[in-house]
Image (cartoon, rainbow, N blue to C red; front, side, top):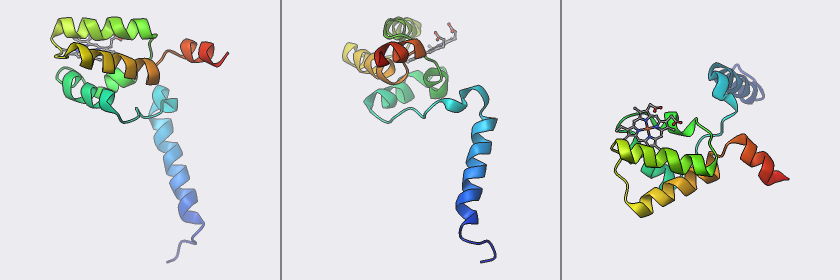
Length: 105
Ligand code: HEC
């Protein structure tokens, strides 16, 4: 092995940073955590647009509830209990920054 052992983690870090930089405005976004909410988004919302188009967005809990309802009105298939799981997931993990700031106070 010509590359010293220490170089590999450094290389990985550099490449990771590059990938983050290339991702642009969403670079600080954490990947959506797994869970039933994410599975529902993959299954029921991917019909019209990518999961990322949902999880890149930040909204207040009320705005998420309204958005999910409006997508159901457009044709997304969700049972009422699935709708609640999804809204709770989005409100918990994709809250608008203003919510996060308020919660931290
Ligand atoms: C029948 C097609 C369809 C399905 C199914 C669908 N969407 Fe959408 N969605 C759209 C269209 C069309 C747009 C872009 C137009 C707009 O923004 O009003 C959009 C835009 C969005 C946006 C970005 C605009 C905004 O309001 O912030 C979000 C977030 C979103 N959808 C969430 C969801 C979620 C969550 C689901 C699953 C419950 C879903 N969508 C399922 C058609 C759909």
